Every structure is written in structure tokens, then in C-alpha cells.
Length: 96
Length: 462
Image (cartoon, rainbow over all chains, first blue to last red):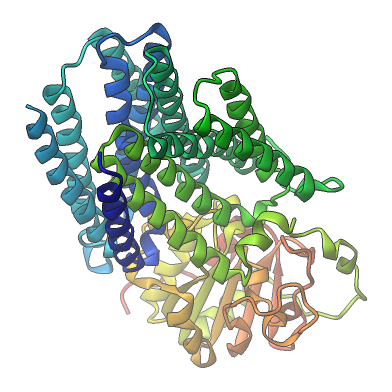
């Protein structure tokens, strides 16, 4: 990857992130954190590439295996618990 | 096939951005989770299909174990333990990034492949941040779970020792960037990063955990981002940057809410200085019974409830909900005033109250409700302390001077449910308790609210 392209993407994504996150309601800061956590577990992609590469050594496989496990734990528990929390937020009208 | 993968990644990145955008309101937030899940699924499937992936047995086994661990965590975890879970997931995310970096380092060395300098820089950043966030988050988790002492652990020259250690780690990292063939340095580098993570967190007290969690969130994101540079994967760069900026914003909000700077949180060891300040002279205060409290609430036109973490510790959320229902049925206007640092992580108190079925349009942020205290009949403080202390506005010598607080003291009547007159986290006496219009209600929050409810006969209709 070209370094300047990478840095460019990083710069843009950071600004987008700062602008979007600033608008998130403080009501939802806890679910926000568990959601961004799940999203950053996209590092599973890197772990898959390391583990599944042709000629991966035993060390690569073991480290990659642990990395995938950790990342998948984050993905699964992150998305599910975020949804579980968000389900609790109800407006008054919706009450029985 | 290579290109196919990149296109999928573009869609995923877009979905991740939408996912966070939809978190701006509770009405669209669940759609946001769905967008995030879809983006994640696409990215994983795309990666598996677009690359020539081997060693499926390892990958599938890891997916299986990860899911088997993740699902129960998500469903069993009580809402009071969400901060611990969050710290744990920062640890997992950081560990994944650090291990991928480590694997990539050894892979390149074994194949005698020279990585470009900027890749090596990114790799060192990835592993440094990854390993230190891993142990740091585990420490934070231990403090939140109260298996480790909550108070700051300090020793002489702590900052100097930490700084020296960090400088050595960075020095070794630079050396590895310049001479990547010195493989023996890498374990030392990784070890120092792991130790530094522990040392970074032990001097930080329980009250600062919301800031620390947000900061660790940011580090974990940045380390995933650095992984993107190492592997030349733009999706990782985008997702890491989003996570990093989110953590950064949340930690800035937390710092502002406590009127502290980053350096002060990280190196200040809060709660140490004023230990002797606690026993000032005995001052008179007024206390009241549940019966009196009930009749005051019954006569009130508007009530603002100020919940703190003590409410969650006493498991009083559901009793508060009953009180809320009861008063609302009587035509009393009940609102909740939430300080940004109420609870143990950003936004934690909102989740705890939402779990008790309190509608979210009754939960107000500090800035939106502070103007209303002057018109409100009763402010009921439950389990909150320092965030209501008027000394933060008036007393320049107070350690919390300048911290934004809820203007509880402006209400016509103040009632405080508290176990005793003991000071809170910051170890400071609260002037609010000694005001003429303040009534102290001594007891366990849950038990006391139940007693008030008994005195308030349920009135149907109205």
C-alpha cells in the first residue's frame, strides 16, 4: 500500500469519526463504546490473513489463532450486548 | 479476485460509518447495530473468498471458540458489569492487534523479507500500543471488578520510573525499525510494553476509570489502525480510526466533566492529597424519616432525581422506577439529572436506568437540566455526592473546584439518601448536606425508597 494513500484515508476517517461521534447522544455513550469495540474487531481480517497464509509457520498459526479467537469474542459479544442495551431504551409512549 | 475483496471493503467501511451515525438517536440506534453487523459479515466473507486462505481448521476452530465465549458474555453480563466487559473487550482487541503484529514481524524475518520502513514503524506502534493496552485494560478490569484495590497505588519516583521504562521500550522499537534482523530484541520490547501497561494503570484511582476506559478504547482503535498500515488494508485503517476517534472524544468529555486534564488523570493519582482534609469540624445537619420525605414528595409539583453510582450498587433502580411511576401518576413532574461521570463508564447511568424501564426522554444531561433546578420543588439525590457539591462552584481551595456540577443546591428542597455522612470518592465534605433546606435521609438507597413508597399509597388514575 502506498503510504500517502494510507495516511490520507486515516486522516479522512479520523475527521469523519470525530464529527459523527460528537453527534452521538450522551444517552448512548455506553452502547456506543461497545459498538465501536465490535467494529474495531475488524482486526479479525488481519488475523485471518496471517493464519491462513500459504507457508504460515506454527508460530503464525498459533498467534493468529489466539488473535482470531479474541477478535471474534469481541465481535459476537460486542454487537449482541449493544443490541441488548439499546432494546432497553424506550420512550414513554411505548410503555404499557 | 483481489479487486473483489477491495470493493467489499469499501461497502463495509461505508456501513461502519452509517452504523455510528445512526447511534445519534435511540430511535435509529438498533439499525446502527444491524449496519455494523452487516459490514462485519461482508468483510469477513469477502476476506475468506477473495484471498487464497489455507489452514481452515485453525480459523474455524477460533471462530467457534470466540463465538462460544462471546454469546454467553453478551447475554449473562449484568448491566452493572458492563464497564468490566468493556475493559475486557479492549484487552481482547488490543491483544489481537499485538499478536498479528508479532506474527507478521517473525514471518518477515524468517523469509528474510525486508519490510519498508513505514511498515516497520506501523508494526512497532501496533505491537507497542497493543501490548500495553492489553495489560492496561486487564488492570482496569480488575479494578472495576474490585479484585484489585480501587485506590491508586503509588511509590516514589513513579512517574520517572514509568517514563524511563517507556523510553527504553520506544528506544528498542526504534532500534528494531533500523535493524529489523535483531530478532532477540523483540521479546524484550514486547515484555516492556506489557509491563508498562500495568504500571500505567496502577496509580489511577477508581473514580477516574471512566476516563481511563475511554482512553484505552482509543489506544485499542489506534493499534487496529496501525495494523491496517502493516497489512496494507484500508478497511482496518478506517475502522481503527473510527474507534480511535470515538475513544478520544469520550475521554475528552470525561475529562471536561471532572475538570481535569489528561496528564492529571494519568499522572496525578487523584484522591491522595486530601486524605487528611476529611475530618473537618462537626457541623449541624437535618435528617428526616421516610414518612416526612413521602409527604414532601407528595406535595411537590416537580421533582428532579439525581442518581449516582451508589444507586446501582444498592440495586435500587427498580424501586426508583416504582417511585417515578407513583409520583407521575399523582401528576408530579419527575425528571432525572445525569452527570456525565455518573456510573463507571461514559453513559453508564443511562443504561442502568433504561434497564429499569425508565423512559429515556425523562433522562436529562447536565447542561440541559441545570437551569431547571431553581424552579424545581424537590431535588432527590440518591447515591451521588461529589457531582452535587457546590464547593466546585464557590470554594477555590477545594480540590474539585471548577468541576461542572449539577446545581442541586438551587432547588427549593433538597433530599439526600445516603448511608452516613462519610465523604465520597474525592474524600471531600459536601456543603450541600449542611444547608438549611437539605434533609438527610439515612439508609440504604433501596430500603429507603421502599419505605417512602409504603408511605405513598398507590393512587390510581389522576
